[in-house]
Length: 186
Image (tube, rainbow, N blue to C red; front, side, top):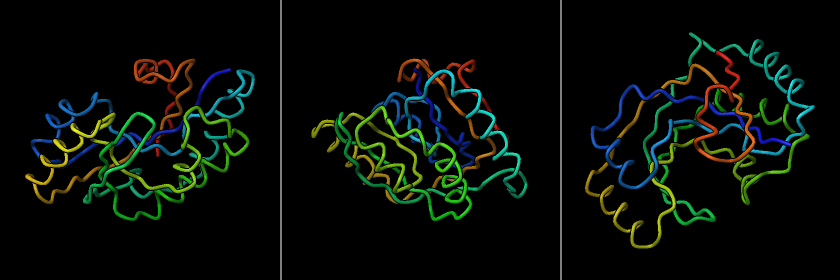
């Protein structure tokens, strides 16, 4: 039994100068991404078939210029089982929503989610960048104050590939290993 998930790799083209330092202070900076399919358990013998189904799907999706532009503007506070997080929401994007629906439909037989609440996040798809995680009340207050000092900001990004991550354990280290990824170009 392994875990699988699908992520859109987010390449930030425009971001505030302070964002990277903010993430270092309030998070473990990992690659920016949008989660299309939340991590679920999958039997080892099903992995080749799911990879093939996603390959067929991505070969059939028409994406102008093979990239999806995404604009992020408003931030909000979210709650997880490990404390609060800060997210910057993407503006509405019908193509992102269409791709996410197709991805979820293909993986719809795999509903044994690895984290509580994941099913809801998948059902109520709200693309965002997480810029701070695992915040207790004091750290959340510090992070929110810092964001308020910065004022309104915009991030502009593109997604030109989606990757299927198949791992033994739900850790950032394992998820970041290239050998655990199958990449689908848009």
